[in-house]
Amino acid sequence: MHLNELAKLMRTAGDESRLKILCIIFNKKKVCVSDIAKELDMSVAIVSHHLQALSREGLLLSAREGKRVCYELPKDKFVMDLKNFICKYK
Image (cartoon, one colour):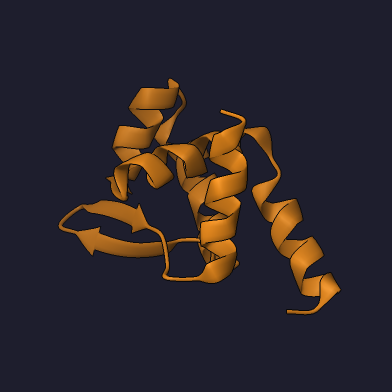
């Protein structure tokens, strides 16, 4: 991974709301948008926006389950390193 790619991933993940979202997913493995919104007391639309941004950068994988969209972590070394770093400070 080149430094410019790393910088882009860090900018995407570095938002406080996105860090909170990532911690929830790190702890639950797979979680749906509405569950995250409820846990963080945020609107589904805002949470969905953040999740889409994280997904676009490859930090999350999405899967539709009926009307719900759920997210999980990819099997990626960077994501696992990010998990170890972020959850240390939660």
